[in-house]
Structures are given as structure tokens and as C-alpha cells.
Image (cartoon, one colour):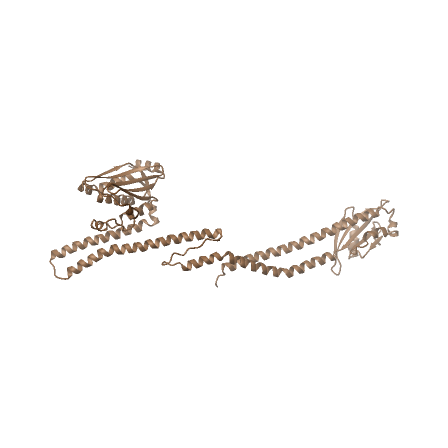
Length: 477
């Protein structure tokens, strides 16, 4: 079974809630109207009872009530729905005075008389035809001190007619009102979900070849604008990632094409005629060099893929930079001696990270520095610490780097001098690996160079919990 749409579910929910609210208000209004009408009837009977009490105070004895009833009858004259009945408290067989039909049931009338007291009491009754009466009863003293039981009954036919008219109008209007609520809820839901349709349209147009579509946040609700902003940011990152991947694929194909073409060309030329064993040996040695270059490219690519994974963060630990710098300097000491270059390591600090990755970053920078440093000079590795960061700077004199190349040095396969780098065995991925390692460590790689002066590459680490790291490393060393 196909699930109901979100707009249908929301529309039905709002309609049902609206219907329940309307029904509840209609019932509440019915009971409120009934209560108010009853209160008005009681108030009317109370006031009329006060007038009867005043009239009874003019009678000297019980006999005068039957003999001169006009004073009391004047109180109910003109009130067709009002009945006045007076009983002698000691003679309940026949009333002293009765105007109208009184209560519907004589037995209820006598019961009300017997229950009368000085406090005003109210009794409700219904006749055989369904007409409802409200009776007020009370004992009232006349001039000689005797008491009579006074009953005032009112016919609530008008009130019942009003309630019946209310019920009829409510039953007629309620379906129309419910239909109006349902249509209004449906329209409101459709307008409220309109931005989601825009989401669907943009999502349907987005492909790996076309990531330029974005969600417009104009007049969008605040809740959905946050979602739209997040989706736009995600699309920006996907677009940037796809472009980088495409560029990287092109660069990788270009880098691999050269050694593969060299291998194919040398093999084809070698096989074009018979050659001596020494010639075959020379070709194989040359092919091995090209294959080693391809192997270095693949190895660097695998390393770049490794440092791009979040799981690489799991092995982070306190690392003493001066210890790692000295280890790397020791590895390059023979190469430096061959070029008559001295290596200097200064300063000390500890960071949190992966020890082997940090060694790899320092090794790549030191390798570049030795490659471009003139003979007889020195390469410096300086470690500095400030309140907010820790840095390791590798600097060397030399020809320097032109300013237009500096923003691109850390791009993959970027070379300032392409032909010279290839002859020196560079894959063009060393500085890209350095930037990826520093990004993984929430730091950055920086470069500054003056043509004909000093070139300095700097690894900048965030300086958090430095004192704890230093204490731990000092104890371990």
C-alpha cells in the first residue's frame, strides 16, 4: 500500500483537530447557554418571590389570601409563563391561591410544599408532553405570624425553543464549517510545503555533471532556510570535490602517461632489431627507473587517500617536534654532507598528532630544502611556540620562488620547473602530502620566499594543552 503524502497527512491532522475543536466549542456553548438561561430563570423567580413576600406582608391572616387574591395576582399578571400557588402550611389539601396550571405533577407540587423552608428552594420537573418547569418554593410569614408555602413556577418553553434553535443551526452549520476548515487546512499545508517542492526540483536537476543548481532562500521559512543553507553548502562542497577529483584525475593521467610512454617507446625501439645483452640490460635498467617513478606516484597517491580518512585521527598522541626533526635530520645527514650543507635544529615544543605523518611532512620539506639549497650553506629547522600555535619552519637560501607560484605550490602535481623536477625524481605530490597532513592535524602549511634569498616552509599546529604534552614527553624522554 502506497503511504499517504505528507501534505495529505498534515491536512487530515489539521482538519481533524479543527473539527474536534469546533465540536468541543459547540458543546461548550450549548452547556454555557443552558447554564445561563437557567441562571436567568432562577434570578427572575427570586425577584418575583421577593415581590410576593412584600405583598403577603399586607395580609392579616390566611383567610384574607383567598378572600382578597387580587394583590397577589397582580404580581403574576402579564407573565403567561409564570404560575403562583400558595398553600396553608397546616392544610395541604387545597391551595389558598393558584394562578395557572402550576407544576406538571401534583405530587411533585405537594412534595415541594412539604420541603419548603425559609430558604428559597428550586425544583425542576417535566410534564407528559415534555415541557420543563422550574419551581421556586419558600415559607413566608404573614402579618399574624402564620406561615404559608409559596410556589412560583415558570415554564421554560421559550428557553427550550432557544436551545432547540441553537442545536438546529449548529447541526446545519457544522458540516459546512468542517468542510471550510478542511479546505483551509489543505490550502495552508500546500502553501507551507511549497518550499519542499523546490527542494525536489533542485534535487532532480543535480547530477555529477551539473552541480551548479542552488536553493533560493528568498521568502523561505526560517526552519527550511536553515536546511536550504545546509544543502547549498553541501552542494558547494560536492562541486568543489568533484572539480578537484576531475582535476586530480587529469593530472594523474598526465603524470602516468609520460613514464608509460617512455616504457613503451623504449620497449618498441629495443624490439625493432636484434641487440646485444648489454643493450638489453641498459634498457631494463632504464625501464626500472621509470617503474620506480610510477611506484612512487602510486605510493604517494595511496598515502594521500589514507590521510583523507577521518579514521587517521584515532592514532593521535603527544609528539615532540624537536625529537622528530632530529630523526629526520639524521636520515638526511649523508645527503647533506655530500652537498656540503649543514643541518641546524633549534627550539622545542610538543603537539598532538600522528608521529609517522609528522615525520613524513618534515621529511618532504627537508628533502625540497636540500634539493634547492646551494652547496656550502645551511638548512635550518626552527621550532617556535606562541600562546595560540606551534610552528616548525624549514628554511634554506637559494634561487627562491616567484610570487605567482606561491599560491599553487601545495597543489597536486604542481611544479615550478617541470623538467628539472622530473629529472630529480620528484612526483609533484610531496607538498600536497604536507598540506593534507597539516589539514588532518587541524593546522596549515605556509610558504614564504624571496627570489635570490631565503625560502621558508612552515608547519603550523594548533597550540592546545601544550604544557601537558611537554610534561609527558619530558618524562618519556
